[in-house]
Image 1 (cartoon, chains in turn green, orange):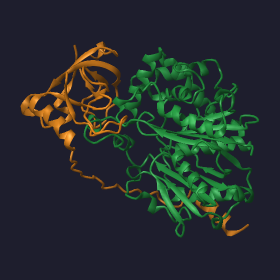
Image 2 (image 1 turned 45 degrees about the horizontal axis):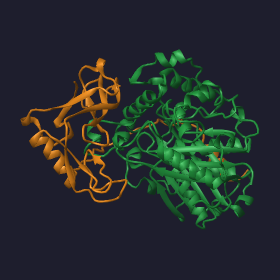
Image 3 (image 1 turned 30 degrees about the vertical axis):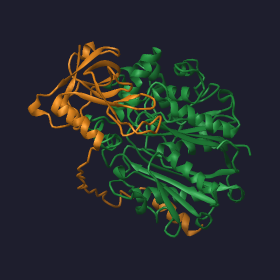
Image 4 (image 1 turned 30 degrees about the horizontal axis):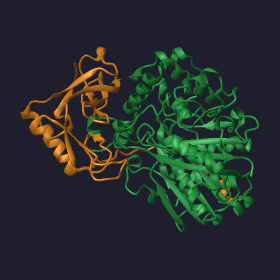
Length: 384
Length: 164
């Protein structure tokens, strides 16, 4: 799809604070809370919503057809409700497609409680049951393999990744929703417990509980909502090979493809000079520079330089993860939707202490599968 | 204010001071018995019976896959040609694992490595347990198989790869 699409907009957003353990909230409570909050934010009522997308994972929820258990909480018991099993950025992509396909509005809500299951078991379950899963691979060790090959290819130091952790935990100090606001030094990160080389504890995102929601509307309903609409200018996703051994893990091929498609839709030819703010999926510190390369903000191997040169700091030309990113709170599946929520708040000028002044164009990003097997890219604009 | 605001305030306020936060242990242990497929069977039987690593190659582009596949992802064509690969190759990526996890195949520290076996065009994921101080990308490694009596048709019939 290369032609410009119809005008659709994000007209409501909501997110919880991300916390290690929400003892006072069930999955159902989280979805209900977010559905209430996103309707309230938009000024729309449930009568204005004709389609609902939930985002969940059966292993994570510990039940099958996890979508069917939260319908009433999402205000959907008499509506068209379906589920995306995967990251919330992909759930919102599907929601946007439903609006482009003729629904007037779509409410997208994602929930997860990492505290209640075993995330290593859940992420071990990403892998095929015959070859890779029986080796005990899960998200941390597979990501460590990717970090290793990325460093090796371009001569990147562990300190370069540590600097991402310092930046993002520091940015989180401006974000009341963040789980881990911290003032860190590179030395703190380097001295933290070694988990799977080169990944250390402070290179990892935390286990979190949380939820988020957005409402996507067609042009007519975007006018009806009380919020300043944030227009969806380009969206795309793309996947690559399933077996990690089939891929060149230092080259995020599917991200390059997804971002090119999203930029084409949005009429963007020079990404580095086209965005005011980026919220991307930094499940581990090394991911931020690698994904910036995939997004075309610099040449391959130059990702760490963007931070070393101050470009991705809050004070820089292209602030990346003003929220503190996933390193400061990672509710699985919710995280990509939270990037869209944060980008929307930035474009509405409502991001509080983490606001990038005058932000007009934002990029939000989510991933699915081991080592970013699949990427989803959103180009959002404050201007119609 | 309307009633919905009251409801929202109530659900968004912690009430653990008025009710005990009861939790329940789940009982899920989901058993599966997977058919490993035709190519998977040939591959695992070769490990078990012959201590050999089989790949297969796409008849259109010639790409040699390991583990073997039914079809080439690049060409979307059937793969019918079997290739016996070397038990040796070199490491193209690795991590030394320092944390414990019940599903790990060895106690930490051990390494996961992506190994380019001689004759293959894609990397093969496996483990390295010994000489971790010598582990670098590009080092040569060789598969060490379990004794025949202990091989069951399992990816860990290759006990680990040894640095040569």
